[in-house]
Image 1 (cartoon, rainbow, N blue to C red):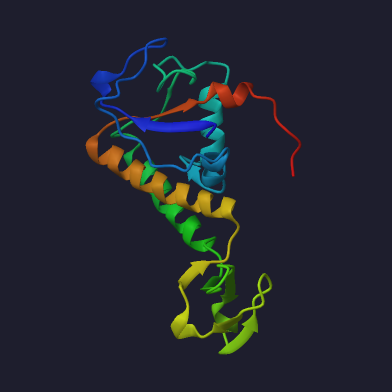
Image 2 (cartoon, rainbow, N blue to C red):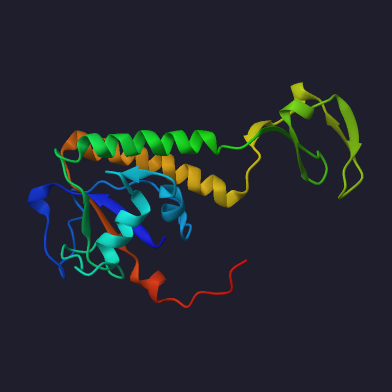
Length: 201
């Protein structure tokens, strides 16, 4: 991921080039997907500023961050939110992220699997009918019976799923950091920043 959030107690903060302590640290459990954090913050605001813009300004603005990095390969950290003054704004951001994740969760679908080759079939819940189809891969009949489905899942692309997962994890992390009274820090992965970007799809 290009950006990394973490929280440590105020008395454990150190200046760059030292690294922040690992024994007393809180981090969200985010998927290792490039740009997931940026996309997760898209559309959300923190203190009347787009959260994504605030994060970028803190790390790439005229005044470079000065706090220790999370680990090797990351640049210095900046304070994204500081309790208690930022507590209400950060809790609003957490609510907003969860709301965005719910709104963009996508249509629900029932899922079946071919008993022979394991090919998966997903049908939007509203369109489910009890029918039998032939598996496109091996030709075996697959019974699309709602009572025999593997369960329900969201019909969204995997990247959007990672973005929504990141939103939920960040919301939980922001609330926990504020409950502990720890400042929320953000750092940039310099390995990603330095890597050449390939052609965009």
